[in-house]
Length: 148
Image (tube, rainbow, N blue to C red):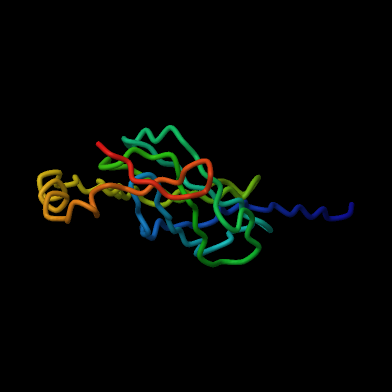
């Protein structure tokens, strides 16, 4: 009787860390993750989960979208609300090898500055009368002053 050999391949998921967020504006941010190990996966699809809570709710594809070796990946999140805190985490999907998630982190989008209307009105009144009236072109091409 011949001896039989069996090989069992154990799938190991990739390893991913969430690095941070930068370049926040009022409506967007760039988030960064790091694929630290491939596990047994030949390729790993990168992405980020984000949302106002740790339930996330939205996903953005990483760049590069697919990695064949460990390294850094980023994602640009757009359509955000100014002055709002968002949770996010990096993810790496190795297919049959499994999916890895980085830790939760937060960032806050910028709040646009509130214009000081009193200062703008004060400056308008300080201008000479001729500077206050914008010059508008006539249909003939000659300039005329608009009177308020």
